[in-house]
Image 1 (cartoon, rainbow, N blue to C red):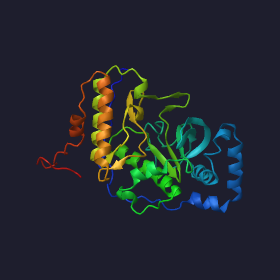
Image 2 (cartoon, rainbow, N blue to C red):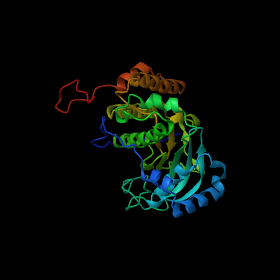
Image 3 (cartoon, rainbow, N blue to C red):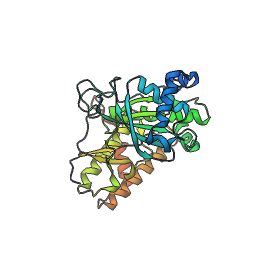
Image 4 (cartoon, one colour):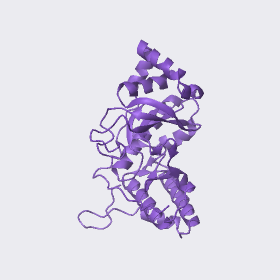
Length: 313
């Protein structure tokens, strides 16, 4: 792998640490309860489709209602087969529709089209399983996050908050100049985002490729970690398994568990990230010290007025 790993330019305002995220009932919940005729026909069509026959545990009526709403709103035009299937979530390829303010016109996620989302552009649809998700694991990352104070403790509320949290984390990371899959839409436990690579030729994880320029790759990873931190986020599960390579870019994925810097376990999560990254690049032949990496990531931002020691958080 000999890519140059070009860094993205961050936006001026990557996100607000104390933003409130709405996790109340959505139109998809109301559709599922109402069971209107069009939705019922949609449900039968999806469940009769070949690629979904083995995914019935994923597509309960409430989840189907969320997909139905995303189709109605024009975020998804057609579904393909599964890209990956895990215990907590399955990812499907789909064709994006002509809707929404996201992704930005001309961006990679928009396929470079002048009008934003194009029907030919493939997207990823990530569906979290409410019944089989690791409820306690998710609560560990949600509790203490100021964006989710007062969240209900039942499994449904936690999974829906987790999905909303991943969408918000992707948005903030992208604005901070971190290359992540571009978020497009979210509805209940369903997240639509940029499909990095293609279903038949998926992007490879960092642990799956021969890193010919590990020094450059490491510089990009530590800079992305610093940008996340300065935007008020810590990945919380960063390793060679949560970074992929696509068309000369290093892409950070799986931000569902990312926490704010004020989370009570933020320090522990950051230290683990630093140790994982240091261990991988040390195996690649670079002498990386996790404490030095942490010092780089948490280094205070320079004061715009020129005074040293100023820090955003």
